Image 1 (cartoon, rainbow, N blue to C red):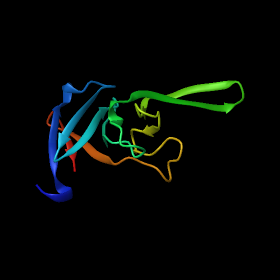
Image 2: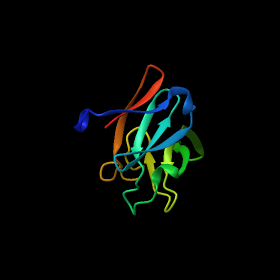
Image 3: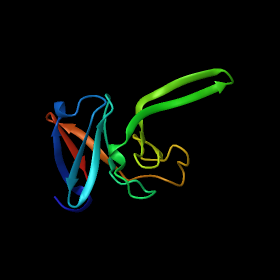
Image 4: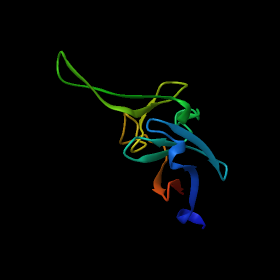
Length: 121
């Protein structure tokens, strides 16, 4: 297939465990594929800040506070932190955690078909 209709098998479904990732190289692009437990997601492995290998960064969650003195740790494993300058991105959307309306990294659709993880380019 060509263009935006290209589908590439990137892993066996059990190759990327929940909370895990795999970085693949396709047509000169480096893409990180992540298993969030309930679905697979994929992001371009390039931080928009200075080009760092974003998908090699640490995974964390989000700390929220509805009022002073009360804290909740949510979305465990869904926030990706750039290994160079610690910029954070939402794995589900590719949007920056700090400025989601203006800054994002390219995300790709991923499906699981016949026990294979398929990246849609």
